[in-house]
Image (cartoon, rainbow, N blue to C red; front, side, top):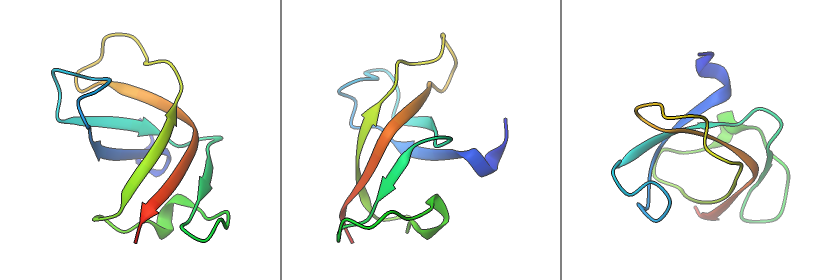
Length: 76
């Protein structure tokens, strides 16, 4: 797994009930900051809250791996 294309996120447990953390594949995802600007994933801060438009989960991996169509930072 290329760590440059993945984020390790805290799950809200709504989608992945059994896990607190998931890997999110950011390849091809549109990433938007709080002002509506496109940014790259290296501009995230660890404590920021994100809204993620998920792609379907990838198999039965532990921890779960999912992709994203769009990632929006909702809190600085």
